[in-house]
Structure formats: C-alpha cells, structure tokens
Image (cartoon, rainbow, N blue to C red):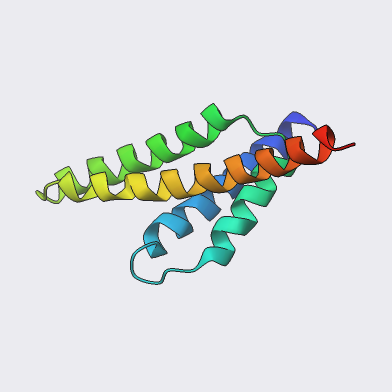
Length: 103
C-alpha cells in the first residue's frame, strides 16, 4: 500500500473508531465494532496502533471538555470501548491460530 493510501486508510480507521466511541453507550451496536476489527485484522494493523488511535481520540475529547470547563472523568468509561475492540481482535487471532493448529 502506498504511503498516501495508508494515510487515508488510517484516517478512515480513526473516523470509524470515533463513530464507535460516540455511539458506544447511546446506540449499542456490534456491527460497527465487527467492521472495524475486520479492517484492522485483515490490514495487519498492529494492536499498539489501535491503542494509539484510542488514546489520541480520548486525548482530543479531554482537551475539548477542558476547554468547555467540564470534567473529563467521564472518559474513563470509554476504556470499555477499547476493551471491546481488543476482545474482538483477540477472538479473531484465536480463531486464526486454531485453524492453523488443526491443519
């Protein structure tokens, strides 16, 4: 993948993740999480990069809340979003390993 395509792809991942986080508690839906983890898994994106996407987004939200004079304590709950994403990725990795070990 060219550097430009990769940058666009990562930006798309960030946009997808932002939508997941914003809707995680108000409109719970597993499909966006599955779509996101499929993209990450099949594009061979390393888990630390997924964590970085989460941290950057939460940092952005924290700065905005501080500008508005509000507490950013509520953002702690959004760790659940990251845990959910990582759990889905772990399950995908587990299934892949299981298929290879049974061959």
